[in-house]
Length: 125
Image 1 (cartoon, one colour):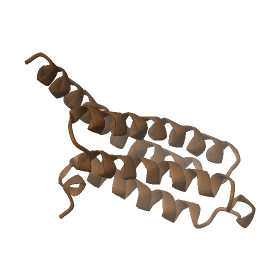
Image 2 (cartoon, rainbow, N blue to C red):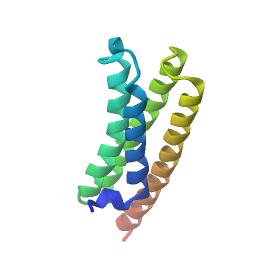
Image 3 (spheres, rainbow, N blue to C red):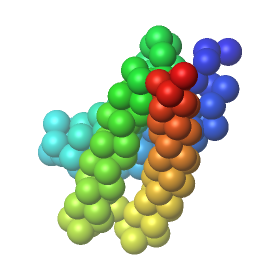
Image 4 (cartoon, rainbow, N blue to C red):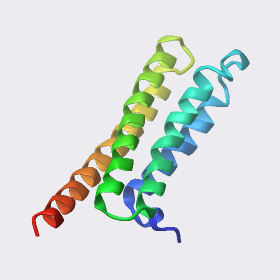
């Protein structure tokens, strides 16, 4: 098993990517290179940055990748809101995806804080 799969944040964000891909399947073709692509890239970026960060050396580098994942989580929040407001997502779909994104984001934030504290403790030695 790759190291990121051992992290709950890695598992949760992978499920988020799958949900985003499934939900965007029904979006209009005119959005293929617009919102569909943006939603998929943002969700993918969250999981991919966790995966890449785990493989890096040291807590500081890992934290940097988690920081990028957090940014992509925020980006996905806006993309989903816009998709809802443009009626690409129903209110129920938006609520489901937003809850999933929010849960993943909170877990990711806790992981970021944990890594930050470990890096700080290492620097204090």
